[in-house]
Figure 1: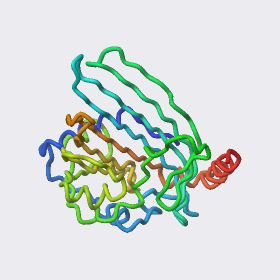
Figure 2: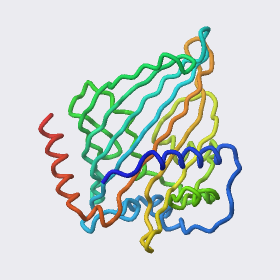
Figure 3: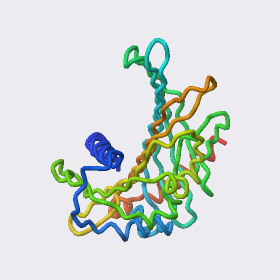
Length: 266
């Protein structure tokens, strides 16, 4: 069920770059409104192309980078939080697993990588938990079912997507007020300077069966460290979904299995 990541990530970065720079968008009409309406209303059966009985595969890639200038150069630290599981649209819960990896480098040299943990997760009532209470799973940000307010955004299409044989993509550059009311009321990011943010929807319309393939959120901000110096942060949250047809292939049983694995480790 896993989606193709590399090509999709390249397109995501192109779209995000265009959004944050405020250019590179045409006026091609893409029928995105029904999907934005579903996200705005929390209708995850449509938003995630859930199975007939209300279950959907979800995969999320969170990338949280920090850039800090020091005497010996730019220090870059990145947390990669990769999660997947099955979402139950009836009670808005998810059971699955997540892996956290970290990398660090100085001026892009001496890159160090480390797998911090792998664990099962449960998402319910807007909260993510692990049966291993000592692990920090706060970087698993499943906020796609809580995007109230996204329906007010007038998204624009990316004009170069078809060159890469990718799904249609629409995006929106967030003002600080929109970021606060739609995104940060869930993420609770503390910052000193807002550098910009965006939401992009990747929509597949092959064979007339339209669906959201991915929702991408990217935020750039700065926060002062203990010495009062500004440190740059870039947070990316890319949440992917399977097709309705794919979700009708035993995902309910996968949900039951993930739930059993979680409960077994408690």
